Image (tube, rainbow, N blue to C red; front, side, top):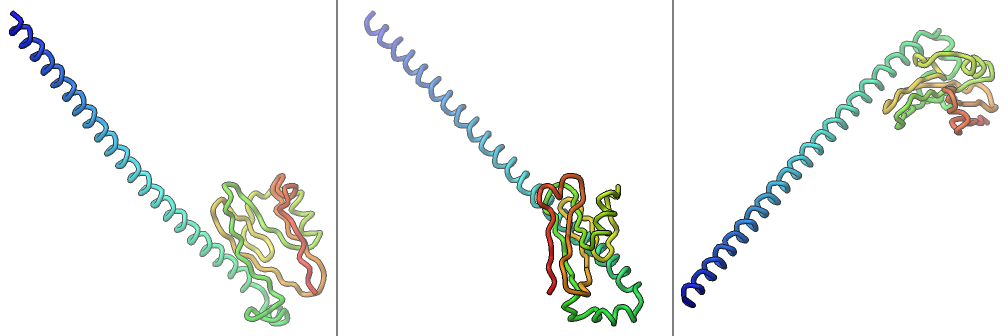
Length: 177
């Protein structure tokens, strides 16, 4: 009787150990599957981020090229005598040429000029400006090109006239000597 009771206890212990081992193996398999799933998800998100970044850079390059083409159309439409009188297009220290980079998720503009130019823009309703000398609108994550001819010494203001932007400090003065 004692011998058969010991055998039953051993059988129960053996069965219990097998169950524990099975649960442990099953837990390890679940953890491994979750780890592989997380790794695959991370890899996919990283690839998507890289593709999104490449697409954004392509859009920026395209927008910069379009802006540059429009700028050259405006610049070259000026009278050649006026271009020469202002010092020409190359190596002209009076001609401000700038690329405006907008890293914000909202629109901005860069308007440089006298008080009359700023008065027109402060009361205007244009959300987007075609690139003309001294004025450029730049969408989120994009770049724009503009120029301004400093033909005499003095101070010239630049401002982002979109609502609230100047109040946040998006303005300044350039002093020409």
